[in-house]
Length: 214
Image (cartoon, rainbow, N blue to C red; front, side):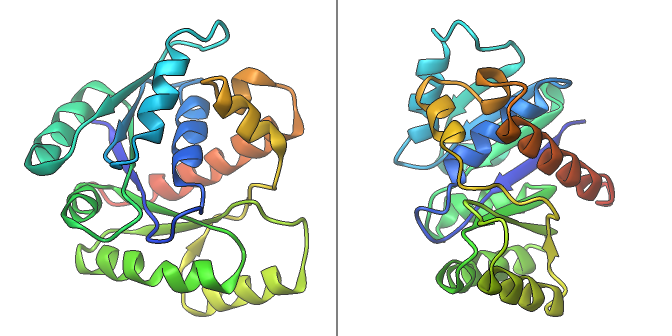
């Protein structure tokens, strides 16, 4: 039975779609992965169309688009056919986001290491709590070290929230790979960005492995 990861954040611009794609491709190095786009902006779907003709695109990743009342049934079907299902959710708290979070084994909340992103995550954290779903936060576009980042880390730890120990830096490689329908682990498998991403995926899998089966 596959695991469902809902990539959710109420604030736009946090990198939800990019992270869903990047994590999906990295996971597909050893697993079969489905990416499910339920965001009306359909950016992940557009990336999937690029990927269909990208020479470097490896097998093992498929992109689907669905929303509405069929979402719960589609998630059930996908997790029987794939090892991991990553859901790119809308940047709002709506019925589709709630359905995705309700069906998830883990909710991954990306945020830039800045107070507005953490404040904006409150709605998603509340929804995950209401649905009794475990949560992991991920710093995206993060500086190597800063006083503000350390302050936010301390606040997150004090609230007993899970923060992935590996942050994604502000690297052009992620955006460049995405623009070609690829993940950074395909576009530059030996780059610092690729190694960083694989480390973040390992930390996510370690956390996911500790989630009780439903």
